[in-house]
Image (cartoon, rainbow, N blue to C red; front, side, top):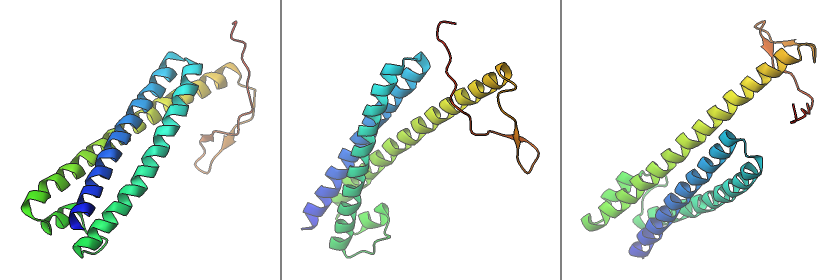
Length: 165
């Protein structure tokens, strides 16, 4: 039973690491489409990124379940870390568990970094665009000031630009 629980966790962790790497690839496609201003490609890349995100969510739930079963088989509390759980295993089974965990953490870190980079890029592009629109159309809407006296971004109405300009 313990061997099955360990193998289930290892398989699930490997699948989740692969799904996170796939998600990172999809995020990079989104970034490239935004940089290229290729809106049809952006739509397709976002659709693929959403699918990859759903797969990651599903596999994360499966991984959490496999981890809970493994801890129950080992007779350990639910808040036990991977490294503490590995101490309850025979020596030959410790390394695969910790290696799978490290690989999963690296994949998650790559996904977090890529996601933050995309968020920063899109945020700076949106800020630059908002500043440009404010300069071009200064009387478009009144400014809304916050408690600190600085202008706040108000709700912007739709603005349609003719691409032929």
